Image 1 (cartoon, rainbow, N blue to C red):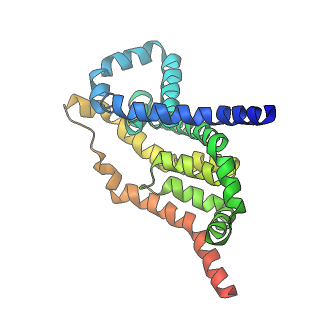
Image 2: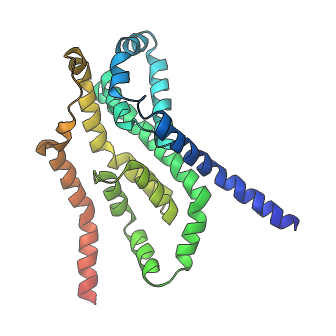
Image 3: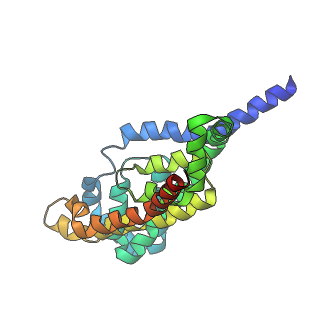
Length: 243
């Protein structure tokens, strides 16, 4: 009886981080929807620049900490924050801070999801048979290409690319590697747009995100998607030939 109680307590504790993340994510989706916006950035522009100039290291720490929290709790405003990185720190440092923050946040939510649900779900998938078993085996045989695709394909939400790998039991090392590298193209683009935010605000305009659809921006990203998918295609063709 005592052992059952202990197991139940450990199970509840294991699920606590994921429960907290989900609760904060739901609350933040409603309360911060209009707060983390371009208007907020524009209205506080002078104060942010003044604080950056007076307390550069403090601004870096505050920016990275806030970005990590946004990623962990899937809060609205991640794109605005990425552009704010370019606005405050320039293209080179802004890109480094954006990618570092997003990777740390993604790693934390992966570990929370793995501890909460991933282990039990992975065990169930491992014990399953038929199509589900084949899909799980195929995923593990192609972990790195699939994880790269999750990061590179623009239509895959970032929070989904964080949670799904944890729930199906992929390698944390491969997840971390593909996250850190796979988000670089998008990170550069958003930071690049952010570098020009000051001029946009001076004109009284709003950021033009149509840049994301330009051929010289989306083209290389699509090319990287094709390269990431190439091993999957080759293995599929080889498998058919063997059959």
